[in-house]
Length: 573
Image (tube, rainbow, N blue to C red; front, side):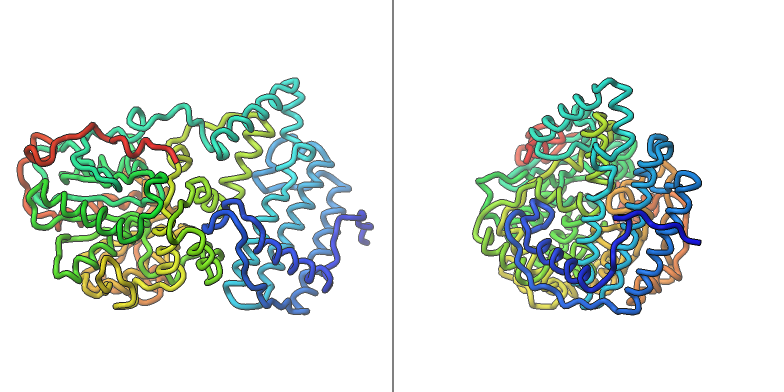
């Protein structure tokens, strides 16, 4: 026999709830997102989606809810409920009947709300937006986020005689000055001292970037130099964190004469810079400079994330001009076909892009903190609320972690650049439409990029979904090798061989079916890093071995300006 449920535990899943939920979602879409949207702050008006909720599915959810709620109540009468969520794993949660019951009810309600979001019927974008909105609300509503309900934080306050609360307040004030929630102890790190330490020198700079040349670690190097173009929405040193996990140092150790673009962190003087400026005066200029410095007719190049989109666009511009300066291309977690953009698609539609164009299409700046907030809220429990609880409710200092330090070192973006990027990639997907996009006065046609290309995608990437990274195999006409690594957007890429972590998947039959899942079905898993596979591939395209240079740059034309990592990377947003 069922015990009577306590009042306030359940909620009636009737049409009134559904209508109320729709209204709440409408308010969510039109609210000031405060940085959670790539549109930045301000109203983001969109049409209220047409959604329906199948009565039979709602009835099933209601029955499941009543059954699970009854089971929870009966279990609570016997013992504290089992909590499998890591937010409630502490002894204070499991030993306190009221706290454990509160957490268990929250988890039940959260599961039901997410199930309701999944049950909504309508166009796919509207369904994605519903799921995203509900996920944000559910994550924010966790009892672990509130001092009055967080048993762990309360216990720590008692044990420390209130010291944890004082430290939490100090942490809040500290983060208010920083302008973001601290994810790591940022005082431990300094760019050029214990991150971005691979030895090198800046050999060229203009208003957009510095070009760093790295000191060879081998007696001989490949005759074709190697240029890396990182994303301009982040600092380049994600590729050069510590010596043991530095992708740049690994490339140098493999005998490549390595150059890296270090983007300038835009300030007010750059608020009118466009996509064309970044292509002509940065990506193309970097390619030409590496050619000038080394005397090489062709180089090899790598683009990471947005850097890959920029690099591919630059090569398409050069191809339209009859030039082929790059011998082999590497793309890491890069989108050039924007049909599959994952969760970021929830932010993009005509109204949103038009609003952004009106706001800053002719000039302005997308603040780095707004962009960083967008990416953090894609994983709200891991990258937002986890630190709110630890830093503020418990008064803890987050541990030192180089990757999270880099993640907090945000960069601005010029408005015209960003507005062009939003419309021509995420909204209209123009780069893969031959002749549709005009860049630097040239009609773009990626079919002209008939060069060998190594394409990498991360299996759990939430920024560049594996299907989006794989889509490049269907666009680029040259000989291709596709590699899938484990983990996400950053951890999958930064996976040095010495760590002996994760796995990678590849297939050697040369087949690239249209569906990434078909490719995966025929791929072979290999434990460990994918870096050696890539290094072997790049070596095959590096040309003969020549004596490593004894000095940076070339003569008086390109002398060392300052030691790596240079000054541009140290500028804060």
